[in-house]
Length: 163
Ligand SMILES: [Ca+2]
Ligand SMILES: [Ca+2]
Ligand SMILES: [Ca+2]
Image 1: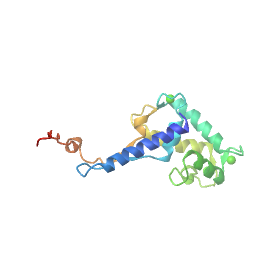
Image 2: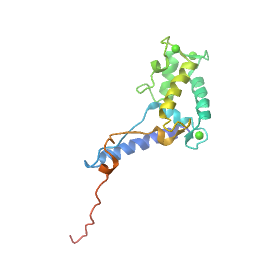
Image 3: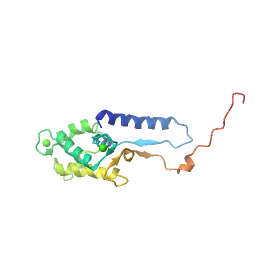
Image 4: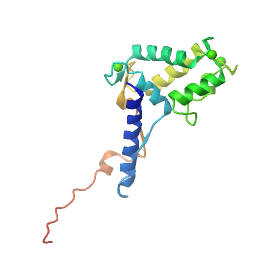
């Protein structure tokens, strides 16, 4: 999957949110949350089968660390992380943040730290623990606290032009 497709996903989720917000007050608004790491994880789907497999995650981790480590010293300096985050995560306003990766706070993100943080996020998304990420596992909805039966709308009575 390329970056355009990832941006399309973001747009689709935005449309979902807008649609729900435009609904009336009978239902709780449905809001979708998108984390910046999803942009990257979706881009790992190299064969475009809509599932990010364990192998694709391995390859993606290698590709992204290599992309970030511009000076090829095997460590991500703060400026390298900043540039990478801007490119791959769409900016630094959303996590994961540099200190999410740099657990020992030595101002360098080693390959092990990079992998550990991303893999922890993969496990967090992997709801069915299959080791692969399906598209629906990326979507987080909030505001759906009420059970489905209560959210069901009553059928709208048919109103003819003569009524
Ligand atoms: Ca795939
Ligand atoms: Ca470096
Ligand atoms: Ca470190």
